[in-house]
Length: 225
Image (cartoon, rainbow, N blue to C red; front, side):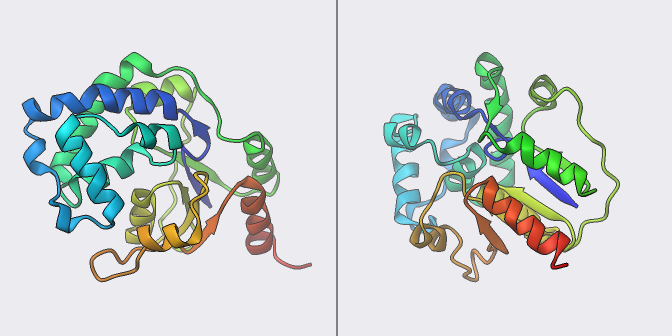
């Protein structure tokens, strides 16, 4: 079975997401989130520390972050709040309020998405979709969501584009497929997935596009004749 993350893997809604994040960051003071942000020395990488420092000082994302279009909302909140799940929940709720102003335009992350999904269906592979986005928005972007009754385990592949997706997959005992649509290079992948005691979760496999993903499916699910 395959479970796909929706945003940043199957579809591209990054522009709306970045607009909503910038709109919500000035709310951090009134929401009590400024004091919840991680200390610089607790950041995973120097780049993470700089992102936190910039948000603290300017209450917005650095223009380069938006220009690169690589980091997801869930990873932004992971960088800002670390393991503080309560703070992330408050931030996600505030995000949903502002995302309502910007969402609606949806396009496939890359042209082969529909072809790959149709191929998986022909192979008889069960497919599901998961998202942390509010159901109101998801239902607008996807007319119907498949309800799944399938136990988690290594035979379930969780395909997602964020470190949060990898953490969720590994903690649920599923096989983690990191969809590297942002085209991070190997040194950077090793930095965001260091495999340390504090940050142990690493993807089982990394694919850079849907052509690589399809080849992986054929190799692992179909196997040699």
